[in-house]
Image (cartoon, rainbow, N blue to C red; front, side, top):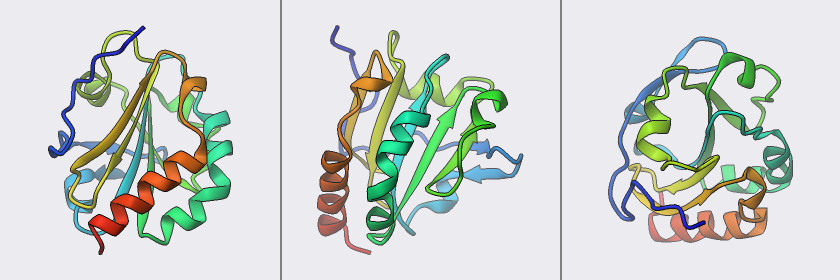
Length: 150
């Protein structure tokens, strides 16, 4: 099934504020200009833990670009078991971010943004297991960093 993107490439994504898993506000607009973003938005029932574990070995190199990993989950229960070592874990309890980023039928979306929150690449998947391998993501983040150096 082909999922139709809601967001257009090379456009600034909708900006938002969500609480992190500890209740502290995270404002994407205030983070602009500091680092590139690797943003994983998960729908109801999608467990990001296995994907985040696969990505963990390449995250130290990605962070040096500099880039920040962000994962958005639908509930505090989904956020609870996730490690905040490599990713900032945010809770979208009202579904506002998911509604603007994920088309109908998407279990998750991975969005690669430059430091100004301009969308460079996205993967929309019906199953989180369909997300690309870490090496492909790392290559995209390096390309974004080379083009939009900080």
